[in-house]
Length: 422
Image (tube, rainbow, N blue to C red; front, side, top):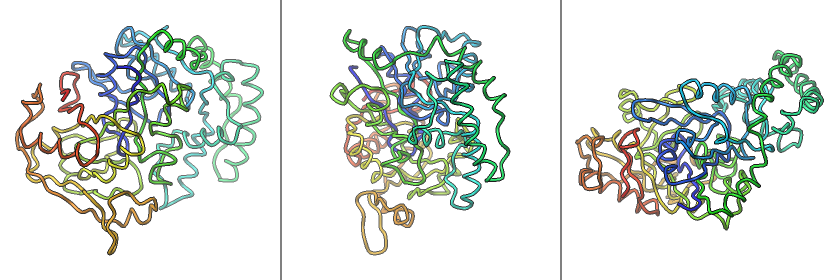
């Protein structure tokens, strides 16, 4: 496998958890490099469903080392609950799991600030999960954040936390929100720090030592390309670099040690939260929701759905340097008679063959579609490329050609055995 970066090529929820789990079989180490517990990766092993928020999906495979890198923001209480929850159902978590000592910590005041800022935005809200991710990254950039190294040192934690809570409470009071209790937060986070201390280490040194010994690594992204703070549909984005470049800054592994990028995308398009979605379509939304599909693993919210957008995925290929495509949820289109694919946008008299950076313009764009015949045949039992209906293969090859990357995986269901290598 060498060193592989796996990224979402749309607006998140592309099925990365399943693809990471499949690819982990050929990797030694899985590294989570960005985001927080606002992300959710769903993995099915047989008939068992696992939803992971912070811990890399590789934890479900024995002998694999799982790493949370420095680019992630960590809710310690959430992480403790995730670890203990997995241990209760028989998942081993010990020396196979480490956390960067320089990863930043999410505190209750971050969540309160997140919620209050959404209220202030009113109709212009972003649609955040209110997990405190943005404010935590904001503290990181402002150089006032606390890191895991601070969390596991009770003396340092008490000193720094008292300052941060005092300042944050003054802001919360001004917003009309209830201040957080230093005494309670310190007690809870001190306890979490004691639990997590054995897992905390210098992950940059660990990863470079592993590479010197020939380890193959898989870098696990969160969310998707168009939620990236720099390359997404700003301001309707997350607060981290979800694109391939984030794998380097969020792990400490340099660009020249990365060997390939795999982009994950659905056979259609979805988005959670606010912001433009040019191909959004009520008919396909109703179809997918009626099938019990497309509800967020973190929030439970119904995802917005639309036709496949090759303009967006072509842009994602360019930004991430995607080599190979993993196309998921093909089976979601099994009953659709005529399938549309957006090949360009129209804004007034202007045609766009690329995504406009101006989010206002993008929100006003109308998709220009090409149409493909549906296959009207179940694909969820297909085990090989040749077993996929011819019209579905035509559709997948068209997506590959329009997106500009090689088709690598076609996924026809959530199970490991519903993964077809092309």
